[in-house]
Image 1: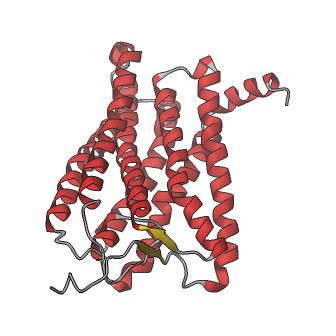
Image 2 (image 1 turned 180 degrees about the vertical axis):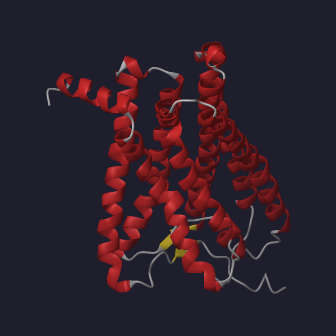
Length: 310
């Protein structure tokens, strides 16, 4: 009876950084710059990998997939945030909010798998170099990449289908800058116990295995590096995976902090800060890390610039 007397809502209010009224314009300029640099850097890496045959290797094939994903990831969250900051319009239709979660969840899950596949690729190259070409052939690369995308979006599709059946009434404010599952479920006046269990099971099944694979791969890699006798050999071997390890640390480190923090009002602002790191900063630093610390990418850029007449 209580639910019947409440009006079903059609819009949510994404509060975002609305409490920082004096910083709306500076935040807009900051996030706009981040978005431009993120898109330019990731798309440049994709173009370089496609155009330069020297980069047609498994490692750069997966890096191209990751850069494409990061561009999509940023476009899922930042344009809506920029619009809210400059226009002050914080309203978002419930169906659009759920759709944003679908793409966010699918891309986040895919990134977990791609990072684990990239760590497995480095493990094979460093620890089993004689069998690397046979194990990581073009067919295996395509299957691993497709499997990463399909697994990521399968979990997100399952959750979104259940979420679309929920009824929302009463409060409609989401104290976040994008539509995540937890704040959405809190606003539902339907029974969310089943979908909460589903989210927990799918999150565990689709994020824990790739994390364990990534961790295991680097345990073997670091162990192999320590067994190399020469300092120059250790440095050269570590340089082939240091960029990927940096991205993995930022992504998983902040992701774990967000979902391990208690869901209380005291930690809400801290949750937002950590969320900025794995949703906005990681796509930004990915092209910067791989371009600034990778000799082959810089050489490919020098080769392609004259062809463009620059």
